[in-house]
Length: 179
Length: 423
Image 1 (cartoon, rainbow over the protein chains, first blue to last red):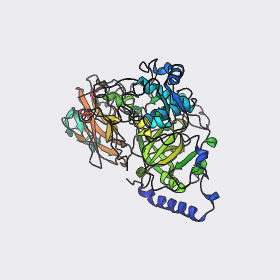
Image 2 (image 1 turned 90 degrees about the vertical axis):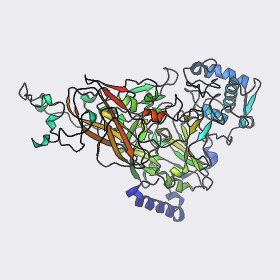
Image 3 (image 1 turned 135 degrees about the vertical axis):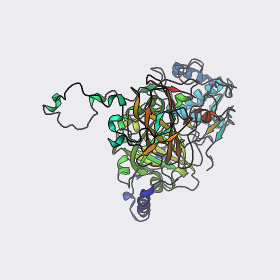
Image 4 (image 1 turned 60 degrees about the vertical axis):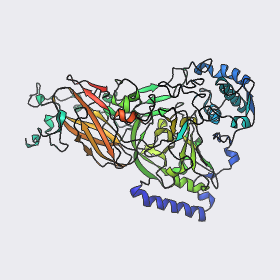
């Protein structure tokens, strides 16, 4: 909804200035500076469900188990169920109960979200410290603990895209997602 | 003292008076005090006898106001998530509708980054004609706009989702909201500078904090919408805890989308399905499925005076005061009940009711000293009426706690003590 009221004229003015800049002024007069997508790479870390942008590399459940014990278990518990930070494992069949247990396995609809979030924000006190292959490994281990991947699994961009989460159909978009 | 007229004109049960009733100032705070003579003559205090303190570079509240603080609530045990939590705007200690910057609520997912603005940049890329990077000084040099709007956390009032009413202050229950005059750049103007690819339908907004907090926002909120990149809050640069040097402001929408420490906007062709729009900030239905992308904050109100800890001291005349707001637009009506919803009186809306902004409401109340149940119920210009707690709960799973906009009930005991109760 448009609610600028008295600012509408200012906004129109601003837009026309912008257009004038783009059509007539030298690049040096346009606010900000140009940048190429390759220069943005270090920041371009968001991974949508399509898996677009997933990096090279791969990691195994076994590698993930070691990393988890060393870097994750202190907050999330030895088996991903003990906390004190968010529970990551189990809770299957609980979503319709009065006390649902919402975990990566029981609730999260997309495996790509796990890769994205672990890479951007975990471990809590050193986010961004895991190599891409280690993020694949930790993701693989957590999916294995939730019974989604076998013990000998290895994750890379292609196999992560192929994962279907148990609760993939459990979400309804209140706002049209193709809008 | 003609101003005492109409004191007896009750318009609803429990002693509620007409909103335009003129009342003598002396009548407030209890009629018993009105005729009481002072026990001691006026003294000249020491601060009137010597020159006071000199000027200062940045003013601070009176030391006598030091008790007015944001209550802080960490979400995890120490050493397992420090800096992840909230602090609450102390609504019961404030008046008017603008939240002071130092008392504006906080919600951080990984602490407050200490950003040097000369090294902070905002990149806009993805489905654009040409990516660009902006410093905050670049943005300050662009045409600026100001919007005075509230900003509310999707988890505000979550304590009233719990099975038993929690005995907390109004701010500790409903204080994950603040309102400010925000000044910055229209996000649509920034997107014009990079050129929008027609395939773009959403953006991904990302912060520079340690969690790189990220959310998806539909492009419709930006093009012909009111989304802005704010640089100033109530006239001064943003505070670090509010996203210094730049943050998104999305008027009327849930707070967690209004990305602080904004560092990146990527134009994309659908939602990115980030952690905070799937596993969090989704609303669980009774059938176990969860609704995503409920963005707008519902119509809501709360009485801040009286409220727990802000109690009437003796029977007599009081002014009930509270806040109402809606993410859909203006507040057009606030009704108050003192008898648990049996009867209602229209409150006075103080000042202009502005869209997506807090509106202060007031109503005189002649408290008899009998137990009372105080409630307020807001209506917005779209016709939406604030629900009761049971009505609000109807579609949701028992543990669902986001977007809680139910009517608050304060019980006032004969002693004057105010408590949080469910009806």
